[in-house]
Image 1 (cartoon, one colour):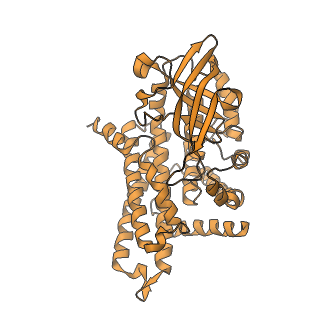
Image 2: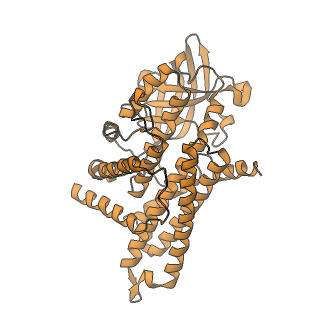
Image 3: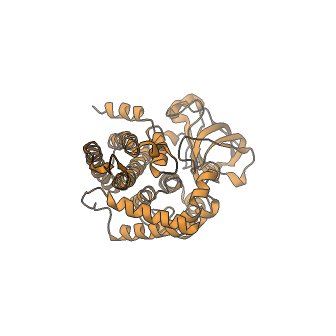
Length: 402
């Protein structure tokens, strides 16, 4: 079985190269980042591929896989050396996220752990907080999640009901969260809560909850999703969960909403990177299929309709890749604004869903079968237009800049 899965991984990588989108190599992909990309590709093939399909079926990548990934240096590469990292940049994060998508391992929730959870602590945590939590995220001993969404408040962050009340040297957290990525295994969770429910956005704070050290924390079911089944997504419950006062992220209450807003451009860029990787892989496996599959006595690629569809998709994918590469470059220079990140997130994920639909159509009935990669890519794509802020919210944000 291990030989089969390794063969599958190699074939995917070869297929992806067939339809590599033809753009100039971005400056952010320097020699150091290329070396990381190559090393991570080998790691995925040798260490993750053998058990990956079983993990997807089980609905959760194992804690051992997280630990092995951390020990190999592929978690939180942008964390400075003094906190256990290798002192890389977002370029290293982007290379890892891109490779996960290209090679078909995108159910592994590394992007959230490394690119979203860890930066909250790095940017807003005290020196003690950074020293306490970042090394564990780098090593994989801690698995990160962010508990933002609630049953009654999706993209409306100001509508959250979870509270954190000060009680001496502690805060007491009460509330529930849903759709929490990495929720079944996460043992370090950034919790969004109201410290002053009457103050609106100014009453929101972020707390770091180490789930192994508190009482009153419960995990609900691993939610049964349309796609991304191997990426555990959960309900979380906080029933009088007492955390020490220094679990508050940063020095002061009421900063949570602004902390969230400052980090959302990176979160939305991450979604765009994932979208483009999935698009590139979908084009690769589809090109491979239409060259081999015959109908009416000739290969499907020889039909003009097939050629036109692939030409359209490759053109739009090339536009998208150039745009996302530019966004990465801007972000590395500190210049990626909310509006541009929103454009990238909404446009690439809309394109992702469009490309998956067209590629599945070119597979015919086989595209609807789960044994073909395009079926999984199709199912996995749909949520991209919803999380990190729905695409409708992205358009509202863009419209405000007009």
